[in-house]
Image (cartoon, rainbow over all chains, first blue to last red; front, side):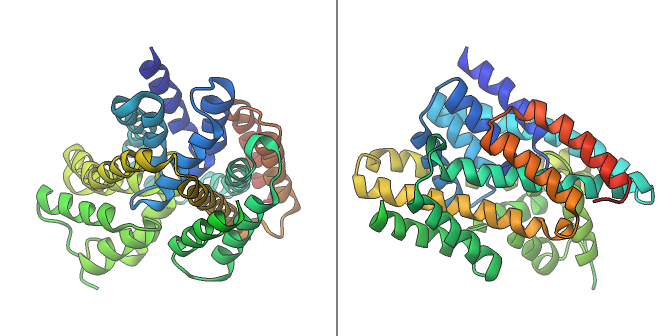
Amino acid sequence: MILLELGLFFSLLSLLSVGGMPSVIPEMHRYVVEQKAWISHTDFIEMFALGQAAPGPNVLISSLIGWKIAGVPGAFVTLAAMCGPAAVISYWVAGFWERMKDRPWRAVAQRAMVPMVVGLILSGGFVLATPGGTPDWRLWLIAGLSAAGMVATKLNPLWMLAAGGVLGAVLL
Amino acid sequence: MQVTPPSSLRELFVGFLSIGARSFGGVMPWAHRVLVEERRWISQEDFTAVVGLCQFLPGPNVGNASIVLGRRWFGIKGSIVAFLGFFGLPFVWVLALAALYADFSSDPVVKRVVIGVAAAGAGLFIGTAIKLAKPIARSPAGLAVAAGCFIAVGIGRVSMLIVIPVAALASYLLARNKLI
């Protein structure tokens, strides 16, 4: 029963998604493309591109992956599973976190999270731009320019995505 | 600045709907605009604190913010209403876009454009990582943890189920000793 499997896996991702959805992209890819082979790498990055370009939170990429694997029910199941467990935690933790404001461990935990999130998001970028682990300079060039644009300017990220689309049509 | 919380569930729903519906190219700037500037439901400081909490929690950041703020004003009903308002339109749009794309995806030019967009999206992740790395730029231990996570997850393709507990423990101990 693929919907059940999707639901369980994305619930687990939900709990692991410190720093938001980008952190779990590598794990999502590892499971649905490499381990289960439910969809191809190309399918995965196509859904990623659509999710990035559409308005709304980027967690919707997970519902596109679910849609590709199991149709509209898959889209509902993955989105609910991706948001549900995290939402329950948010609901209960909000008050507790406020009360812990002056405890030293809270600041330590916040600092400790930064390097992990950095490493995970970087992994996401690398996996998406390196199909099958084989470097393609054209994809790396587009990714590098877009990263530079984001770090050096205050442009809306949509401009970087649009430029990536144009470069893709020309180079690939 | 005068801050007035939403007076009804309906107002809450419409407010979060207007965040989701307009958030082209990133949700956070629109969340700020709607919550702090347009509707003045919360103050700037409050917004920063809520965002800080939601970045720490697992899950989508603004999705979590809808849960936290909805709860503050209307309890569990508020959480559900704000969450549904926020996700409703983007969910429909993204599926409509995917269905539309399915009709054109066999066109080789369309395919190249989309793969280019994905590569640029990957670049946005890399840019985000670089920006987030500012607080650890001068900490060798912090950079080592980040590099270790990248090598294990990005290159080695080790499951996050293994990497996260190990990295979290190491990172917490280093941070407690002021090395991060």
